[in-house]
Length: 202
Image (cartoon, rainbow, N blue to C red; front, side):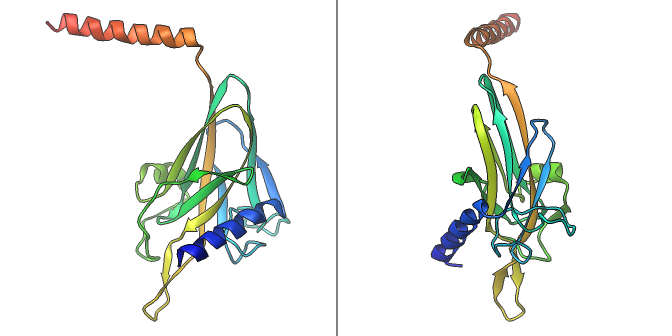
């Protein structure tokens, strides 16, 4: 796929976020929330994250965004991971603006790609699976994504084409920003500990 075609698909998928979107609250509990990608099931026909409820629900196939707010004095860590079979990469957006991409991984061929199903913790620990960790400050967020690199299918005639279907998940954890005085005491304590160990080892 040419760079131009790939970029155009990303723009088209990103523009589909605002039309017919399913908004889902994302709790700051560190628990995985799944999403799907399937250009055959997507209402837009694109590769954006879609409702992962494999039923006849009215939301299935609509673009999916995850919403949350981080309060002043707190910092969030958003983790996104590919699942199912390795070889997929995502662009991640906040309110339609690119936040970043998940890690680069080798392109994989369907049938030989590592497959761990929907075990998101195992995917996070496996370097064959793309992942991204984003540090977020205080504010309101609407997180969505689009598949930018897909597992490939052998067309049987010597060519390859993207599968454009996968699953993945994201999770959010939030912690208080340490007060400046707390940081100073932590650094002083660490320096004292290092100094004590050096003294006792002589």
